[in-house]
Figure 1 (spheres, one colour):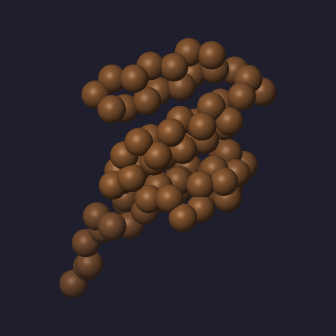
Figure 2 (cartoon, helix red, strand yellow):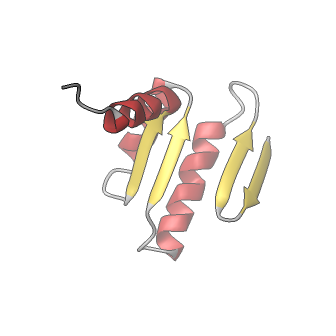
Length: 83
């Protein structure tokens, strides 16, 4: 598993079944313990990973979303009303 940290951004690149979700969960818990005031956005590709992270990180100041849902929310938030 390859993990990179640059400017407080974490990028995890690894094949299916390698433990990415567990790694992310542990990293996020560590960040929350060391920086309780942190606001974190965690973006995953699968609903399964997002659901698991939401369940395990409940109560923390973390927003978990899939890339698809995040893009849909972004598009809806930038739409303008037609006259």
